[in-house]
Length: 199
Image 1 (cartoon, rainbow, N blue to C red):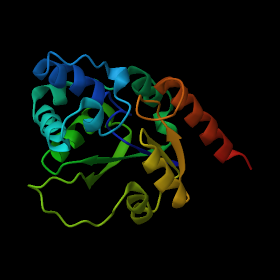
Image 2: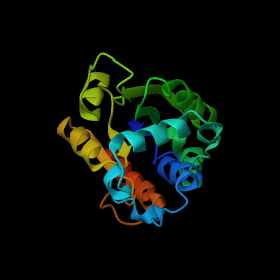
Image 3: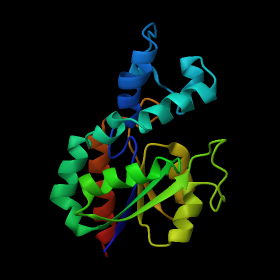
Image 4: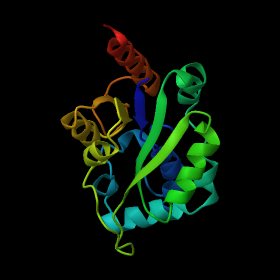
């Protein structure tokens, strides 16, 4: 049985869009940028603010009820309902230590019937001095040792996975070059998994 490793934010959900609409635009009513204009992740340069200001805003959103209330992407939820039982599923996300419990609870609340492991790569914050076991998701996947496919919105994470012999599916977002929609990425995932089953 193949193992799919899923990024959480902007793959299983719409974190950046929710944060931007529900936190950033509320706190910055004069901001004329639209979500589609977030062509970098992290988007501090696009927003014209210091990285610390963006991270503080994101962390406030993660600490709010809005973060916990995010809905999964409907097309991803449907994919799991139709196909989830055919594969093993792991979530590997980059988040802060303080937000990891809420992130894990969200995953198991929405995808618990299928997901069997939650792993996180600590996102660096000055207030959290943590041991750094892995420098990127590729190293985390090497340690985990059982991944066949990584589904992620970061080209760097997809490339790091490929260096470890793990196939990748890039979910289209404004900050990457993938074309189409998340539903197109799921169709690509289906094709990739089907090719892995061929003799």
